[in-house]
Image (cartoon, rainbow, N blue to C red; front, top):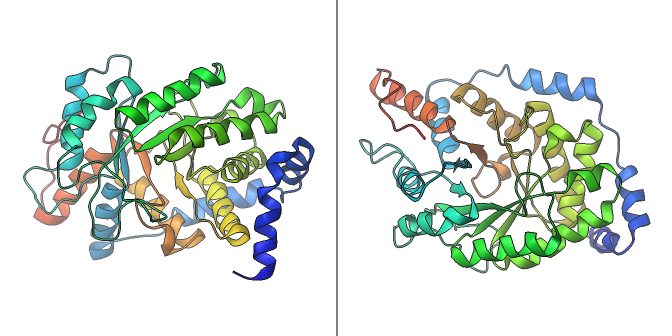
Amino acid sequence: MTATATSARSDLSELGRSETALRNFLHGLPGVDQVGAEQRAAQLGTRSIKTTAKAEAIDLAIRMVDLTTLEGADTPGKVRALAAKALRPDPADPSCPHVGAVCVYPAMVPYVAEVLRGSDAGSGRPSGGPGHAPAGVGTVHLASVATSFPSGQAPLEIKLADVRAAVEAGADEIDMVINRGAFLAGRYGEVYDEIVATKSACGDAHLKVILETGELATYDNVRRASWLAMLAGGDFIKTSTGKVPVAATLPVTLVMLEAVRDFRAATGRQVGVKPAGGIKNTKDAIKYLVMVNETVGADWLHPDWFRFGASSLLNDLLMQRTKLTTGVYAGPDYFTLD
């Protein structure tokens, strides 16, 4: 790393010490050209991916899925079945890759851990590396939402207890949600401090910071929230909880990808991106993969650095995969409904 980059990294690490400095930095970021971002996202969405490239894209997308259930009616039996599907999405085809993670509420973590623990692709994150599993090592991670998901409206001590309980139960990834009220009111220091405290409570678990972009109103706010989450130590930035009407979109994800690209250039640290909510079919998933490749490059085309938060997406990927390998579409009831 050059002396200039080292100096910039040091300066950025000091921002959280001063509310004024943090505010000045975030509001000094370049504004987002709304028309340009939306046109760029639409243009990338027209790229055609076919034959062998499409098959590779489908397998990669499967490996990037955080298979998710976040319903009040979730039961131990349901999440155990989901974990089994995460390990073997298509039991009839052993060549089908496993997903990236299973994502559940903290109370459901122990039941998912029962299924993942002890399997060849079970939960657990090797220590000493910057990411998740080394190349060639299959791992289905266990993610838990926390910090008073989805509202983020609870005292900090309750949020941190939520995180610690999930990690102690077996979660090796935590999906926290920021306090959007504090962010939109301009209390950036408060949001920063909560992310820092949550990261500390995670221990060795990786932290995904949910921005809830549908409530941030502008692309400028998405860029600011992305930088704030990264400056505070987030390992991933995530679009949405999936609990508000507007979830992941291509333009919002483009803004976030540009933020992680610029953050790595400034600090040397790579941060992942997770669009979540509303991504339901293979066509849309491939659009996101094209955007990743064109915006940040191949370094992010790996489950360590890009994930889809989804439930129904996996079945569509499996249906398309079956069509490519057999020439016949599987019926909609061929795969389990999650």
